[in-house]
Picture 1 (cartoon, helix red, strand yellow):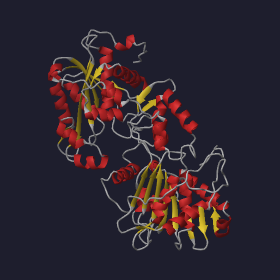
Picture 2: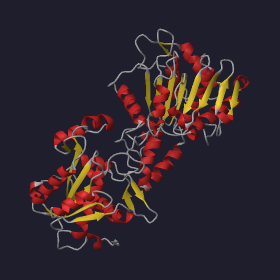
Picture 3: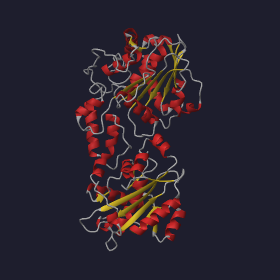
Length: 544
């Protein structure tokens, strides 16, 4: 949307059209069909900001998409592409383009009784595109004569063909029977699950000759989502790893190793920079993110269209990787250490981590982690989670137990054997679970201490873990499962500035990280046996 722009801003037009490289060999570029689509849209008007009421002239990248999607035709004369996936940062004119396409499918596609639906994570989000489309209709005399707006129902009806554009409510995922000509999916990355997407795209358009699923979104932060699935498919097609002649991919964004503070990188990700996106706005957002690391991920995701793990990045992986010093388990035998146990559930990953305190001022904290997963469903997990469990198993970084659940007795025996090698002084565990195992471990002679998961208990060792990592005073050997979990951590902060890992907000597993923090706490408190608590020298007030 063109908010706050000066009229001096110039729309960058498409000088020479080149057909999409994804055009099938037997498809043709129909200039007339493409011209008609472009002409329809450019008869509409901008609805907000300085340019409200002025013609909606397509920017070069927008026109390329419209010509590709609406002008690439099969020998039958129908459109080649049924799905268009457009991934682009915020403020690039996404909502207005989506609204224009919705009206084109409803009023300008020569489809009798076309059903066009606006979908989003909730009705409010879906209404954003609808409101833009409604305003476009009221600002276009030709459409005003032919269109009926039912604002209370969030419906736009094109009277000559009986076609309509309808915002769907959130419970539509439970319904079927749609005869879809078009679907506009706004911010696909916010979909909580795949149910709505499947209902609207799997078979709903079978009765139509050229249905179009127009998916437009910024990058997300959940790699177990439907949006990530579609994003991955788009990337595979763009990179030549997959072929789907019905799928049209467009991704504007930057790579993870691109310098996010570089204006050249901003330009690469934002094709409307200087037109709908003010350079000053991006610069201000970048400066704010530099001063507040918690904003970095939001900047990367929303301004540079990078897929990020969490809404708030906590452990920078480049910092973590600098602590990849070798770990020799044999050399650690006989040394004092402290354990952290996170059982999670019997069908999930179980983590047990040993932390060895330094022997002297020149030594470091050594982390020795162990992970278990049920053997039976490992292949299913690889396919479902897109995580390298099978590779980690081959590398010996992930242990498995027989069957489809982790047998706690197996883990107890394993810990008992570890106790014969290492001087395990204490094992910390989540006080809300593992009652039976705790009793069994105590019966084996281990000192087992409950560990709360609230701010009071978790904040000091979590902060200390970051400090030790920054100082390169920990050693973890680059263990890949633990690295993955460290990269998954979402941090919750309370008003007093205390922090803790948040399992609910972390979209992927963090059990090993939590177990590490618990074990580190005991090591920091007790050291090698004769030392005072490290916390005493940090100026931290310890409760409990």
